[in-house]
Length: 204
Image: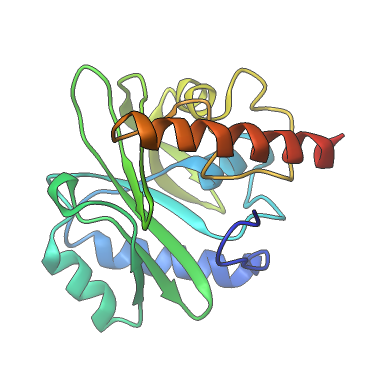
């Protein structure tokens, strides 16, 4: 049960260039904010996590529209795959010179949420509402969930400050749940239990 699309750790300098280019293009279209592993590295490590494999950014679902994606592809980004359902925002994985950037649209309500849709399963995160505020990262300022500690606790648990190298985006986050019927939920629960036990042994 290995994770699909195994990717080597990102090159730090290339990742910085990719993020800055992404920011320059998005400045003409819609705001974005650092999330997940990229936010964790910014807050905890002061840079990209050395073993991270991509850049994670969030957008508000109503903001990220086709013109923004067109501008990105016209400036060297390639759409690798769609990672969410169209009815909850344009959610894509982009590539720029072997650097991957995953763009997740966030839906706002009583709770904030974002989606990952894969061939056999549809997962959704559930987060406490947050605002946005700039943080310093790699010598520049980027928007991030405010407070960032709350976001990181929702996505990684209360021990988010402790580095964990073996991590599964499909199974490790405590705020993931399945969108679907009882069979899908049971199948996911079994796979999650198995996968998390394997990861726990690797991290010991």
